[in-house]
Amino acid sequence: MSAGETIVALATPGGTGAVGLIRISGPEAGGVIGRASNRRGAFPDRRATLATVRTADGAVLDQVLVTRFEAPRSYTGEEVVEVSTHGGRLIVRRVLERLLECGARAADPGEFTERAFLNGKLDLTQAEAVMDLISAQSDLALRAAHEQLEGGIGRRTEALRQELIETVAQLEAWIDFPEEDIDPETGDALAQRMAGVGRSIDGLLATADQGRILREGLRTVICGRPNAGKSSLLNALLGQDRAIVSETAGTTRDTIEEMLVVEGVPLRVVDTAGLHAAGDSIEEEGIRRTLVEAARADLLLVVADATLPPGEALPEEMPEAPRRITILNKADLPEAPGWNLPDALRVSSIDGSGLDELRHRIREMADLGEADWGEQSVAINARHRDCLTRARAALTAAGNSLREGDDAEITALSLREALDFLGEVAGRVDTEEILGSIFSQFCIGK
Image 1: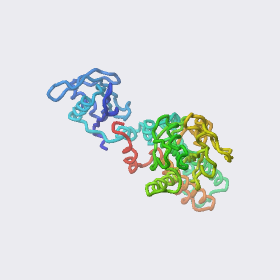
Image 2: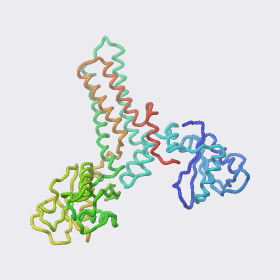
Image 3: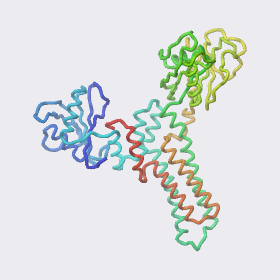
Image 4: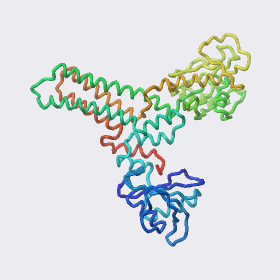
């Protein structure tokens, strides 16, 4: 990215709509729209102005509204111009082409937000939160994204860095006077401070699983014997006929994956082939895929036909999963004798009985309820977890070094490593190597 270049991109989704929004950012943003509209003088700051975008030979392309934001009071920290056009595909494309002709270049994915980060408008966690906000599929995910966008994770990690900076300063004072040993009282105080930082890091790391579920969905696998009603259950949860339902055993031979939200919890639900002795190679492959999906599941919904005895209705081998709910399906029909599973839920995919209780149980097992969420209104992502894990390891090494009476330089070195890893979370240290990876996941225009 070149900070001296002026970039342009469509900021609204492609397709036909009432309005298309084109964003321009860079030192020549005002000049680009000025040349495209033959306007003399700058557009006023933060006020929508009617203008006409014309071709190079003066033909009218579109009447637009132009809003200019002077630097540094803009999203990117640079001069920004937003051009609202009519929302037709052709109009938007022609106006965008004209702006490119007038001196802008096409923006790369995430380049507007990357410039906001580089210009100090956002820290790295806030920049990532922009994408989380766009892709949020539940109220809880939206809440976590807003907290992160407001700097929640950045503030917490920065507070921990300040704690460690004070600790390093004390150690370096001892390093400057090597003839004096660290007295036990001072050593205990340093150890307690490091332990407190360690506990805070552990608290953030504990949100990693919640963060993954909020962003990706609770991976929920429906499994059971053929004709247990797995596909009917999926359709009932979705509220539509997504999976083919048939009395013929083995109808579902491949996995079917759908996203839905259950009581605020995003679920990535996978319907699988029935677990039984395979009759042909295709069924055998379907069963293999079922077992693979079950091994990856956060939540396993084991579906059994309650009209059959337990020995015939339950799979011979029950896959393992961190969370499991046994569902006795077909509760609208007479139940076979012998069922004695206190925690099982009785559900009918036909009349809907038991579905509300199932949804409530899923939410409880996701550990994402308001009571479980508590004060941890942030949820770290995989990159944060990696940085914090390394910071925790370095902090542990520093604590061990201090307890074992090693030279202060060794303890300080480990603390500096912890500082660097904490700084990487919010981009307080050199993070050039990870910027490309982060911002390449953004849509163009954001």
